Amino acid sequence: MPSQHQTAIVTGASRGIGRAIALKAAAAGYHICVNYARNEAAAADVVAAIERAGGHARAVQADVSREADILRLFEAADRELPPLGALINNAGIVAPPARVDQMDHARLERMFTTNITGPFLCAREAVKRLSTKYGGAGGVIVNLSSVAAKLGSANEYVDYAASKAAIDTLTKGLAMEVAEEGIRVNAVRPGVIRTEIHASGGQPDRVDRVKAMVPMRRGGEAEEVADVVLWLMSPQSSYVTGSLIDVSGGR
Image 1 (cartoon, rainbow, N blue to C red):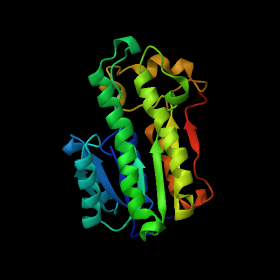
Image 2 (cartoon, rainbow, N blue to C red):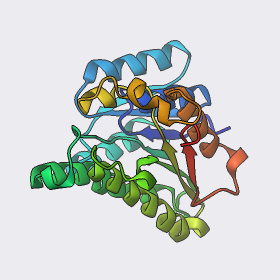
Image 3 (cartoon, rainbow, N blue to C red):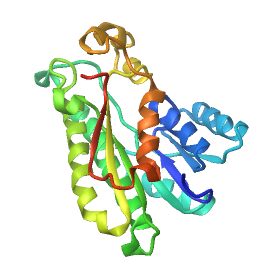
Image 4 (tube, one colour):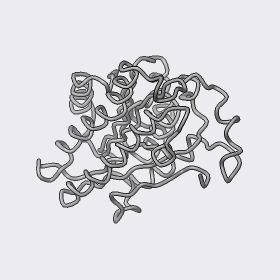
């Protein structure tokens, strides 16, 4: 498992899949930088849970749609935590269901800035710290994509699906760029998972409504996704890079 003196930055770690990843990565030995955009109380709860279990964590507010916030996030981790060992690009948004011909510019700009530009900039900052080219010791980047990238999400959120397809391409391309620099880059593509993101997109009952479309006939849990992310962060996946792993119940 990782050194007791490495940090994992988990974006969007105050809830859902990000929270589950932060808790499991802390249990595996990482110091955790718990990033959150707005819910300070939820982030503080994650930090408290980690510390009660004997781990180490620090909450840092940063909106990943803003470059200045991303720079501040990484600078805070540099200043207050051990050297970076892993970036988990988890933060993302979804919007209420709509057809493409109903989407306005403001929606698309918000979606793509948060879900594409933010992860690109976070990956850039992580590479500058992890890459042996920059004097780093190597490390891992795990991007959270979605099976929506291959399904398209017609009549719901094609924009979200397109943003996650971009994350798949980022994963493939970046993995090849930094493979010789000690960095492994992979993506996990969750399916229908029971998290708060559905409510934020105006569909709090979405998991129960669509679970019949899943071959396993159920929604997944955040912890099931986190387990795969933790494997990708571990030495057990040392020969895995540029991979897209579906956690979707067969969908």
